[in-house]
Image (tube, rainbow over all chains, first blue to last red; front, top):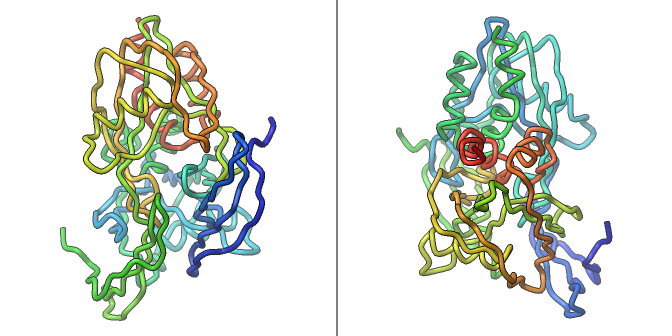
Length: 181
Length: 181
């Protein structure tokens, strides 16, 4: 479909090692000029780790941005030079100490398309076994293992407060119930 | 639960009329100092509009951030002085020209808790009737009306690419199927 905005100029207005603000001057569909700021960041991956016993590995993470503890799936950014799959395997290992036998790409979404260009890809990781984690100093993550049906109930009840994690769980509900036998 | 990070200093590093970057110096759990940047923005609302005929009102919006057309629910920011309900009714009216007979708060989530403090609240709007929209110049939105089951299928198939909209639809699937009778 037709692109309704025309970009006149584009510059980085602010940046940090994790994301930047791209400030564009644009021509709007009504012919007027405007400024559009985009939080520009790497593609991200969310991983849905299932154990051979039909359990899901969840993170309970302290998030400084919202000053709250959140139930989440392991997730993280795709680093330069990594494939999506490499990033998913790395985050599975670092955040919950997981290794998997198979990794399947399930889908993708825009995390916050009103302000940010982040694309989130999500993967099912099966036959996951756990070992030591490798958290960064700013990652405060507890690892929890819960039966599939219990985690789905948490997602339907709104207890998985990280929106992308809840989306991945609900979109995968049927697949997960088949896995849990 | 215990707050694992201590905030040492806090300042606004960059701002625009829609959001700002808050840059904090923090003390990490391991005793080291770090910098944490948060995209700080208003609370947002998503509205799930259902007509008396058992249809959902969807937006198809061009999103400059991701240079793509996205299927979405009407949504927007809560303005200073507005209640969540007032914001939801305003966005329903402005984005799709909708008025409703009843508005029910269904839940809340963190949109992107890795970088942003946005809290999203979502509402079911029932007996929705449509009139003229009131789009801002930078809003490029088509209004579509589709049967509930078709929209749920789109959400399960990953066609609703705005993650919060897809989450709201999937979390409300049972409630929607009851409404469609």
